[in-house]
Amino acid sequence: MKVLMVGVHKSTKGGMWTVVDNYLNNKDFCRKYNIKYIASAVSGNPIKRLLYSIWGIIKVFFYTIFHKYDILHVHMSERMSVFRKRIVIKISKIRKSKVIIHMHGAEFETWYKSLNERNKKKVRNTLNGANKILILGEYWKDFISSLVEDENKVEVLYNAVKCPKINMYNCKTNKLLFLGAIGKRKGIFDLIEAMKKIKSERVNTKLLLYGPDVTDGIEKIIKDSQLEDYIEYRGWLHNEEKAKLFTSEIALNILPSYNEGLPMTILETMSYGIPNITTNIAAIPEVVNSNNGYINSPGDYEKIAQNIIDFLANKNIRKKLSDKSFNTIYNGFSIEKHIEKISRIYEEVQQWKK
Image 1 (cartoon, one colour):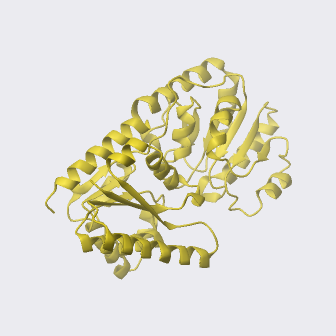
Image 2 (cartoon, rainbow, N blue to C red):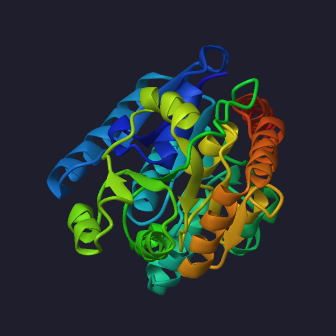
Image 3 (spheres, rainbow, N blue to C red):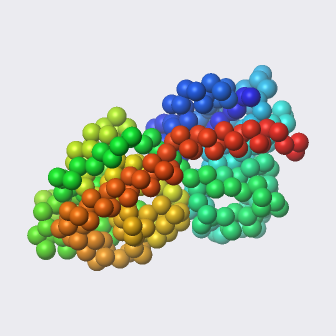
């Protein structure tokens, strides 16, 4: 079997690339399915992104002309990602390849509902062109199923992470983590409000921020809020630095998002036994619950602050939530189990006549 996989460039550093990177780093998986990967999206200014997308589509076209592959596996979010992949899917029909759409977009439903009827029809046609549509959680199933003619083609495939063999959690640290795009959608302003309460309560802790600053001034916001002693912005967190950070510095991960799919930062931190404070949106409640973390409504910064205080004050709670977090990922969201499932999906799709 040969599989052509199309997604984003590693410079995007988001959840979609993390999923792709997990595939590409699994040599046995890549060898078994002869994976050829082509990136059609990159980070940068609009002109760079446009030219890179055109070049990516051209590469897909020529690869399709000169090679026969059985399955096209496209990673898709919302907005222009849909229309890029629409072209790629049409190209794959030249070889009559089977198509798997792997959906990642946190704002896909909101974006779809904002479209005019003409563009909605294009989106539905794109989805109906797939033999299988993979979604990140059960929460998405009813909506995506309503857009396609055959709801049986929609299947949940949870994101997954490499998981240590044992719980690596450090019970001695009091530091907090935010890992993701630093902006309103991820709840950063609610987290800042929570840290003001933490400061007023004189809690011994510090919040470390990692990720691209889409506020265009997070350090100024921290300074204006007089939280320099409680919040530190560290920029990008590279993959090779994660294990050291997670096992030495972080007690608790916080992601108070308003829109998500299934955040990789939650899965990654939990795999190291780090409990999470997060929100009851999208597929998050399918992973985080009161047994392994804290889950609140978006915008409830007072609850976030109280969760932090309660967690740091009680070592027994910390140990319990840490063990539950680790076991949740080890037993249900490990990359090994994910690879087993995607392999089964590949084999099934290849055998279908249509």
